[in-house]
Image 1 (tube, one colour):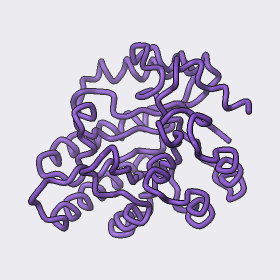
Image 2 (cartoon, helix red, strand yellow; image 1 turned 90 degrees about the horizontal axis):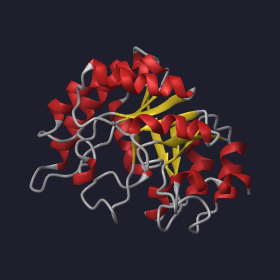
Image 3 (spheres, rainbow, N blue to C red; image 1 turned 120 degrees about the vertical axis):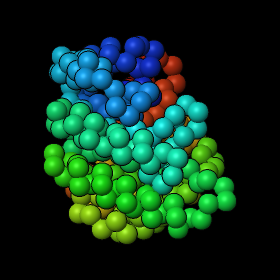
Length: 261
């Protein structure tokens, strides 16, 4: 199984530009990131510093989020939001350009929280339009855009809360390079049988992310059967990376012992 480290949630003890080297020191050759800038279109100098930090560390960027708004303040994407659509569109070429320069082939587009009083269909139509634009741009660098479901216990306003809901969005947009981001933590948190999901829908997976439930810590800190999960992913022929998107219990560098189990 190939693992990558999400540097937006792991190694946060360090400044961003030091995290790729820390991941390499911990034995990883691949990383992923949420959109790491506070605006959709940072200057070339900022982009270049991040590119060089990743390249100098000798790791590969295998996943990158499009700008999802102010995540710390509760934003969870811009695809569906009239008040965020222009920001998302301003980010498309920038994010795709960064991904292309680093050989990254997976770009995550978070759907966006509901706006009270706004009809769901209007949100969906805007999301599909933006997702289509993102997919067209991503295709130019050979990348896939992924859509994920997020648990509503922690994100009560996020409307895509199940694999079935994500599949509906993916099917509606109808682009060949739009796939499912199987975040097994969120799906398990919502009561889905993740083993059955792997067995029946792994062909639709564009990427996989993990954390343990409850707590969102590293495997072994909760109740999810990760030994079996990894065995099933291997058995069905999943060949992509598995992104470590957990909050480490203790120091990040000390949270990987489960890989030796």
